[in-house]
Length: 435
Image (cartoon, rainbow, N blue to C red; front, side, top):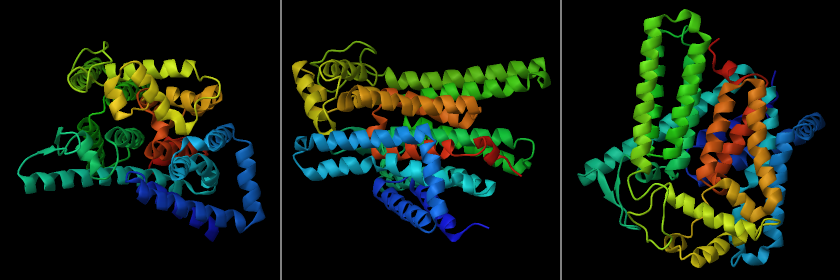
């Protein structure tokens, strides 16, 4: 029978999952609650404390997460004078607390039953669906009350659609690209659930699960993130290809042809959507630094320009980095040097987590980041955990075009989910299978 302290920690884990797809202040309260529950757990018994620390010291991935948080803290404190307002520094460090908390808190996952672990994943899937429905309902309300689907953003003068991109995810306070990554994991879980329970589910339940899957894919389209749509395309093709390869002996020639046609059709639709997103303005790969914001920039050439500038800054600060507090001032100096007026005006970060960590923490920070991404990728492959593998693949791809671990919603999402997968006693798919 489970002790009350273990049950308390479980409630903290569920609280974090429950608030994951919502704005940071709400999620932050849940994280504090989970930490308090965990501290009670280790203080109620010496055996609990020994269990936690033995697992931590034998887990290379957990040690890498903790090492990254310590390095960031040290870099921030050493260059404390870089922060004009000390509160900014402490807020920046607060964002990195999950690197230190979740490797400890989620060591307790193996202590829970299969049903309890299953509920963690189901809770995440439910909350992503509910939060996206919240966005759609508020979007519909805005459209009805204003009489138009369009909204003029007073900050930048851009005309936005109440049901798309920034405007859609703004209703729950999350950047659309980060929310897309949440929906992508929910899609992976939904796919795995459908595959595991296809034969055992009733017709009504099966239809509901298929509609849920298509609903999640539709939300990804509405959020309009080119990199997440690309990841979705690769994951769908890989998932379907693996599924049908395992069942190749059971598939007749006409059915195989129908499956191939369907996969090609889905690929074309997704590819067209990506092309509309990245090829709608300017030249795809060429750029002129001096051009202001507008028709000359798109999501590809703008990132190429930022990566070029960040790489030049790294060449001069590759050993120890510039420190967290000097990131924007350093990049602004190089933007000014290149007459990169648009980036200078917006104070852009590198929009690449590898370049971001390299610039602020130097070569050691880059190495720790690579380990944080590669270890889960390798462990999931060795374990043959398809869900974990696809999640890791999607987030690494996402981190090529965004500074994913510079934003609290990216940090919490990646560290929590990676530590959860890492501590599962069995494959993720086994917790999605109906008894």
